[in-house]
Length: 400
Image (tube, rainbow, N blue to C red):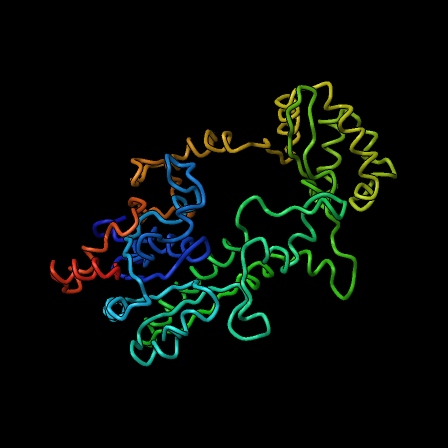
């Protein structure tokens, strides 16, 4: 394949982002992975508040390291007129503006799509918010856990008791919004290639997560009971979940059909007669009698180590997985074998980083350093025509 100089899909695209926390930074990091230049505008002296979430990565915050590689950090106090002049100069040359400020904040600064489109008709504007533009929740504050609650995620996640509801262990609502913003911007760039005009991408965290809730919603269609909370087990398919072996290890396994159920009884449990036991002869029966079946499974597994259980499952071609902790994921043999780890720079030195999912043989993703706060302010201002004295004046006034 002859690809000129490893050209990336978004080389030459400039993104200006007024971003904080996770949703917008996660979106713009994906754009940077594909080659876009992302100029991250941060508050002087403070920056994206995700920088202060923790110090787990050699003194840097885990969320920030994850979502901000390959970006340039420009500090601007957007409450000052001189800062707005700088921002206008950036937008005049930019392809995309992304923002996830507090509800209504961008519009109050004159950064609504309508205002910007009149001035910069080719600019794509992506607004990410909790609930989207319009409606009774438009101005309501939204954080990831709150959207997990509003979007029904908590009602189907966790243990069976009301007090056992559980949130996702990662920022699932932010990730959903970030990925829809990312794909929305890509589609807007394609559309601009046809029409010559920028467009408005309005992404709601609530709508992103509710889209992902499609299965439990349709399961509860027209007032039907929703899937019960079932911990780490599947709520409606059984056996599908975690089971403990005799050595204390835990195995995750899943059966999808009656053929697999028969193989499971014959080759894993070594009890072929269970395949036709009327208590377990269909998935809905196994699900109704899951506690009885669980006891039979654990009775067999108690005589085996976790690896021996996995060997039997593999031999029967029953889907299974280790229940890894984070140390297990860092050391995962599949990621190592596929050479999915690389290094990126940071203010704390080199750090390991997972290459973006979706490997494309035509190009290598951009994997540049995580920026320090304001690291690129001077370079960006020089590019916009500011001289040394101008930059020092802006710094002294707290503009940058």
